[in-house]
Structure formats: structure tokens, C-alpha cells
Amino acid sequence: MEPSTVLPGVYQYLQAVQDIQKRIIETQAGVFDRVIEEMLKTVRSGGRIFVFGTGHSHMMAEEAFFRAGGLAAAVPIFMNDLMLHANPDLSSRLERTPGIAPLLLDQYHVRAGELLFVYSNSGVNHMPVEMAMQAKERGLVVVGVCSRAYARVAPLSALGKRLDEVADYVIDNMGEPGDAVVELENSEWRVGPTSTITGAFIWNSLVIEVVRRMNAAGEAPPVFASFNMRGATEYTRAMMQKWGRQNPHLKGWIDDDH
Image (cartoon, rainbow, N blue to C red; front, top):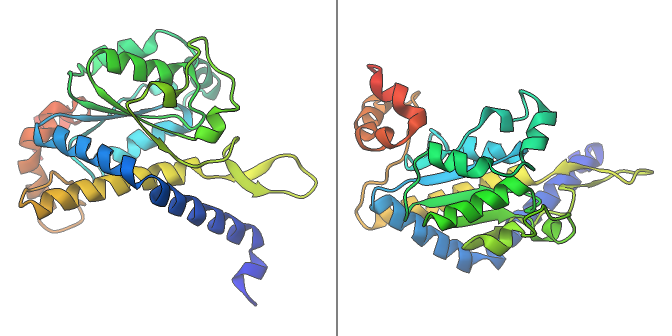
């Protein structure tokens, strides 16, 4: 029996995700190239690439951080109460609360000329939009990753702005309003969200090309290796002497005798 017959919903989801990923790259190669050049400029100057998101979008900051095959220059902006595991109601309220974004930027001591990725699937919640606006005021280059289709139908916050209106560069994750793409019979609701898959795909696609271009230029890209690989601990210790000291989440790694 064909798997598509046994698992029709899975195959519908697979096709939808593949189609979206293909459209992301084929329709936005130009903006990808410009963002990659901004990332290269930041890494080569020793600057940091911050990654921020609220709700499920905070997983993109996790994806960028301390990941085998990932950039050592990536610094996640974390706030525990914005993560869903502690209190989802509080998280949902906080991402709509004014005034938190500048406090977080202060906490991470961001510098003009550095880079910030803001992930927000709907592209309208107060905190991600405020984060982008505040970062630009401080001289950071801002990349917004959102669904433009979703942002056009979602209600605006009191800021009256969408993420794609305030970011320097915008990458459309091509998601549908409401995120989920698999329809159910006799129901108005759908399953199968795509924003997490496409968010990780976008980030890692950018990282791959940044690293490839550095490697082609004869530079040593600051890339994390899996600690399960022979020699990775020594390699990482040497790389951390530069990059670990710029990331508050890696301070313990530097202070400890790894």
C-alpha cells in the first residue's frame, strides 16, 4: 500500500511545506543575498547577530544558539517569561505589552552596527515590532522574518505598525494566516503549522551561505561543532576565546574549565 494512501494528511503537509520552502528561496533570492552580506559584514567585524522571538517564535533564537553547524556570532535574546513552558497566558500577554523591548536591549548591551533578527509569524504583536523599532534607533540592522499574508489580516497593536514596515530587511516565511495548512473535514480549523519549520529553514539557509562564502574567501568561519565529534572540545575552546566572551549565555562556559 502506498504511504500517501495510508497517511494522506502527512503527505498533504509534506507537500505544503516543500512548496513553501521552494517559494521562499525562489522568490526572495535577492533579499537573502543582501541579508547574507550584512551577516558577513557583522561576523568579519567581530560583531554579534542577535535573534529574538516571542511565543513559539522564541524557538528560532534557540535554533541559532550554540548549535552544531551554527554560527558562534549568534546571540539569542531570551526572557523566560516570554517562553511558553512557564506560563502560556503570561507569555501571550507579555508579547503584547509595551516597554519591555528596550529593557532587553539594555540587558544585552547591543551596539550600533550589529545585527538583529526578529521572528514574528503574525508580524503584528507589540513586542516584536517594538524590538525592531528600538533596535533601529540604536543603530542595529534589523531583519524581520514573518508571514506577510498573516500580517495583512491580523489586528495591529497600539504601535500601528507591522514588522515588515519597520525592519530594514524582510524575509517572508510564506505562511498562511493562522499558520496551520492542513484542512479538516467538517471543521473551520486546520492543523500542521509551518512557521517553525520555515523559520529554521530560513535561518540555516542564511548560515550555510555565510559560511560557504567565508570558506571560499579563505577565512575560518566561526562555526560550532558537535561535542560528539572527535576534537570538537579543543576546537570549541579555542573559538570561545573570542566569541564566547561576547555572549552572556556562554559566560559559564568560558569561566568553567572545559
